[in-house]
Length: 316
Image (cartoon, rainbow, N blue to C red; front, top):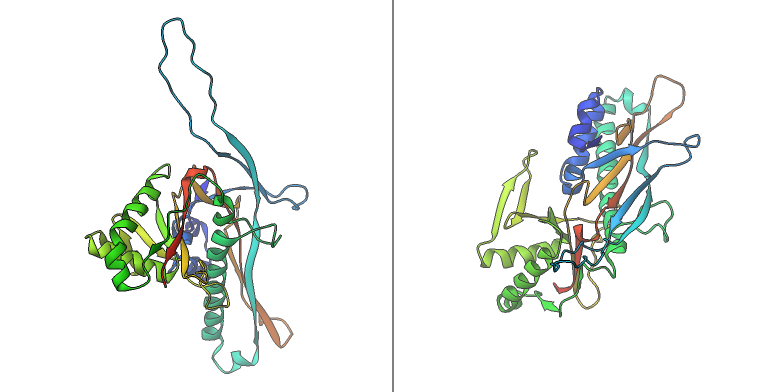
């Protein structure tokens, strides 16, 4: 059964785990909106966490025919893919002496929140930049899937590096952006990039009255280009470097995806919550105890045209 993290928490009884799931959702559009196909059951004694699916590469065709004439056969092109669920998270140590000082609850909470923050950053980074050929522990991300595809859109360089450049080029940019978004196989669920790019899109959208904001259920302000959310993917785990980088020429990329089980979605284990925690246990001997936060997941792109990337946008 496909679930979101919001739905997954309904099957969790532990209040702390509920809170951690909400922490994963807060300030992270992808984790709050991705549908997870919880269809992977460990087989072979728990050694295999593989999700297999078919990705549509081309579109179907239709044609007219004359009487006594046959249609020319045509089949959509598809390709078989598999993705292995990957384990990510973090651990922290807290000395039991802190419990005697009355600070254990707040310290555990702090460490949990920070590990969740790091795990969310790692997830966003891997969704875009993941490459299992480079790091076998990671899953493959959108950049690898989209490079060379029909939805890799490379216009001539569009300069949005200054306010004057935005004034001069915002119409061209929005025309190119609309053309890019219309190349997907449905309405995009999000436009994603780094903070600098999102600020530039906001500036362009304001100039044509296409900018609006709404609050999500956590009270966070979500920005929109028309009806499409503008999502800053943030920084990499343990770093101030943005998930979506800007090259030496000041150029960056914009990603868009249609979220859904027939488009771009997450994958998790069957019958298990996608997020789990282990709190320090001070009821046994040992001065230093360990807490952990962990998620088991991957992503799948069911149709090439369900996601796209727009290159060469000059933002600085």
